Length: 239
Ligand SMILES: [Fe+2]
Image (cartoon, protein in one colour):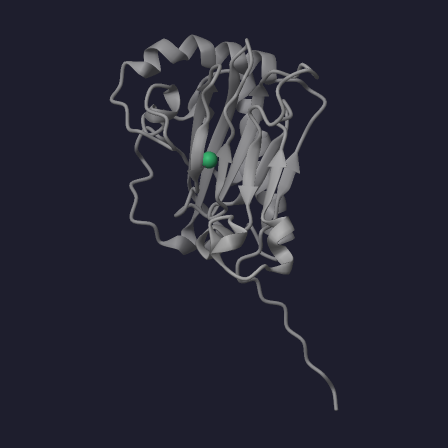
């Protein structure tokens, strides 16, 4: 008898990274630092334990709408990553279901001693981090400013504590620490919990984060607000 197999994605934890030779990090660092004062004038909403920085203003602006060559280049990389992500999970980015309804994109500036508590980006479909600058001194304290990704389900099951339940074969594999690498754009499913460990460094740790919403989610969100960028098909095809 013939055996039939079928491939179905439930909640794949796929990570796709995009990098390029052209360095846009220095330009982006300058742009973000210059915008900081203006952004901080708005109404702060605490995010992942951070209420003082520009992260707390993430609903008020979109880095991808800023009129600079570096921001336009970042748009290209974001769209390239989106297309690759769709391909990697067996989806067609040209299908009506995966039309981008909106991308929200904000910046984070963490200074000495600051971090971001564990959080996720649900209800977006996929999210990404772009590292702009951070302390890269080889003598920096261990773990400083690292992004830690937690295996889906682990936190709900045992809070990271062996004593909370029977020991699982997976317990050595419950989190992955990533040292930030300037210039790398990393996509992940929005449900993936992560945090930024307290950062130690004289220069600020600057990163850009974004959420992508697609049509199949039928999100009840107004994508015309200032926080959104809605790319057109032509720009998507060119990326
Ligand atoms: Fe995040």
